[in-house]
Every structure is written in structure tokens, then in C-alpha cells.
Amino acid sequence: MLENEFFAEARDDRTGPLDGLRVLDVTKVWSGPLATCVLADLGADVISVELPHGREGQVPPNIPGTELSWFRETVRRNKRSVGLDLRLPEDRDVFLRLVATADVVVENYRPGVLAGWGVGYADCRAVRPDVVYVSVSGWGQYGPDVDRPAYDPVVQAAAGWMHLNGPPDGGPVRAPTFIGDELAGLHAAIGALAALAHRARTGEGQHVDVSMVDALLFGSSGLPTLAATGAPPARLGNETGFVVPSNVYECTDGHLYLAVALNKQWRALAEEIGLPELGRADGFRTNAERLANRDAVNALVARWCRGRTVADAVAALAARDLVVAPVRTLAEAVADPHVRARGMLPEVRLRDGSVVPLVGPPVKFSRTPTAIRRPAPAPGADTAAVLAELDRRSATDEKPLPTRDL
Image 1 (cartoon, one colour):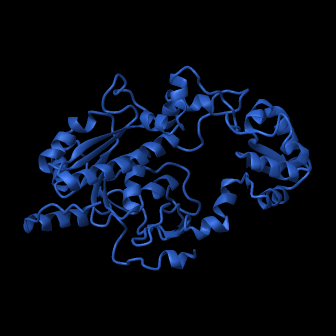
Image 2 (cartoon, rainbow, N blue to C red):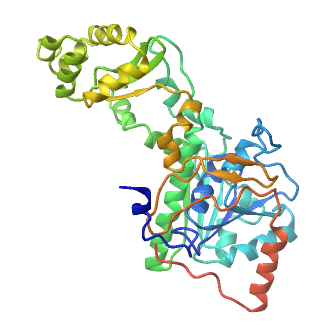
Image 3 (cartoon, rainbow, N blue to C red):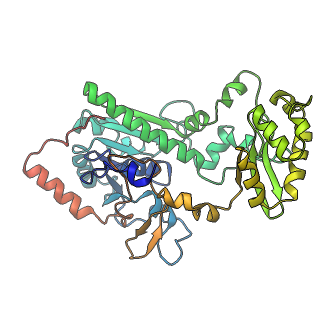
């Protein structure tokens, strides 16, 4: 299918599938801002509530050629920003007026903090009874550890993820990305949408509780079940515990990753490496036998790869319909023509006038396309406009925005 065929029936009168939904974003760092970024990318009107002259998200380094942080520009795009200090009674009152117009509130403060300021779930529900209030935290809203602070690497350590990561003969290694934050943010967005679907059927709002530890355990491929039943998985580095070969192999100019999950794939690989007799030989013909013979299998594949460039090895293996890819740097990955064709690095004009490639929305919608519609605003940049809208709504005694069926 060509891109223009996929989008042949696209509408141009919607911001995305969540057009008409209003979200208040009371978040910081990454997990909460990512959740609301997902909702904003999908077309919701997301209003970030930030300290009036704060520097939330200005994490170094800046994007080259700008004074703007990659951190803020990534997860604050497609949003508006209102400057309020929720610790002040007058700003709290303004916030609650905004809540009355909103469908969803997302926050990621330590449990109890916003309630102490008078803007917790009970306070928001008092002005918008059917509000969906999403709380993201390290440990959740209940349990023995709720009062503990958390950052992504600490959650990776606490959830057992870090212990599994790294080489078999080395120590634990954290993920290079904010995987605990990312998964919690995605589950927060999913939870908000599920609660909105429930509200569309029943008229009921609710409090949605997302724990980073819970999200990372859920995102651990079912392995916690093995650990809980007395069979904890071992640290395997680049390999897996159920498929051989599945590993990184060195070529003359780099590395590739090859995964052989099916016995017919093994036979194809044996043909390609010049050892067709191993396709059905004892010790090699089934995956169970190859698991027991892991070192010998890896040695055979490694020897074949060492004499070839990455490009030649990948081409030969792909011609056999094997699952293989070069191990790229991130710079190489984002320059790939397929990644560009998928719109994952659209050029966006930032608020300082610079044009940079930002990571785009991953999900494509044929009828309601999504896009980066506006860059990240400076903290409080939209205060006057949003409050003017609020005053107009109050003057006309408008009801809260209607809930769209999801």
C-alpha cells in the first residue's frame, strides 16, 4: 500500500481522533508529560499547568543550534501552557475553574501532594463530578511504599528489570532510555481512554492509578511469573532463553542481530553458511537441541559473519527470508529511508524559529491523521488566551465540553 492510498479518506477538519477532548496536564519530568503528549498527539486539547516562570523540562543538552532542550521539546509539543502556582489559593481557584471545563486531569506528583494543595481527586470531582483523574507515581496510590520518591533508574532497579539487563558475566545495567517512565506514561494514556469509554457508557468518572513499578513489571514479558514460581530467568545479555541462535554477531565493519525461531529457518541458515548437513543433524535440527548446544551454534554463526561486511551478511541472510538487521547507531536509524517515509522525524519549527526533526506520533490513522501541530510553548505562554476562553465560557454560562464517544 502507498501512503496516499492509506490516507485517501483522511479528514482535514479534526486535530486527530481525540478532537474535542480537553486534558489538564499537571505533570513534570517524563512519565506524566509523555502520557499527555500521547493524548495531545491524538488530537486532545492539552493544557499544561506549570509554574509561571519555571524551567520545567529544560534538561540538557539543548538541541544543537538552539537554546531549547530536547527534553521539553519532545513531550510538551502539541500543548498549551498556563502559568499557575497551585500552592496559592487564587491560582488553585483558577485551576478548579479549568477543571470544570476538562474531561481528564493527569498528574504525577507524589501521592497526597496535590490533595494537600486542594486540587486532588476529591477537589476536582467536586467541580466536575465525571472527571477522569489520572495519577502516575513510582509506587502507586496505595501500598507500603507510596511515600517513597522515585526516578526511572530506581524503578528499574526495584522492579527487577535492571538485574536482568546486561551481559551474563557482568553486573546489572540500566536501560539507556526511560523505560519505566515510558511504560507508565503509555499505560496512563490507555487508562485515561478506558475510563473515558466507561464514562461514555455510564456517565461515571473515576480515579486512575498508574504505578511505574506496576507498569514495568507488566512490561517484563511475563517473566515475573517465572520468578514468582521458583524459576527466575537468568541474565542472558543479547540472547534469549528460548531461541538459538538469537544473538549479536560481529562482522568486518560492525554487527548484526540474527534471530532463528523456526526449524525451517535454521535449515535455511545452515544452507547459507555452507553447512547444509547441520540442518537436520543431531544436536542442531530442533530448537530444543540448539538450546542445549548454544555455544557450538553461536560459534558457527560467528565464524561465518566474521568474514563478511554487515551489508553483505544481512543481504545474504535476508535473501533466505531470515529475521536479521544491522546493529545501527541511533543516528543511522533515524536516517533510514523507511523511518523517514513513516513520518517519524518530521521537521518542526520551534518557538525560536529553528527547524528541527522531532520524534513524531507512532500510530497512523487513515481517517483522522495526527501530526505535530505546534511546538512546545514556553512555560505560561498561553495563560492569557486560555483564561480569556475561561472568562468567555463563564460569561455565557456554558456547560463543560461534551464528552465524545470513544
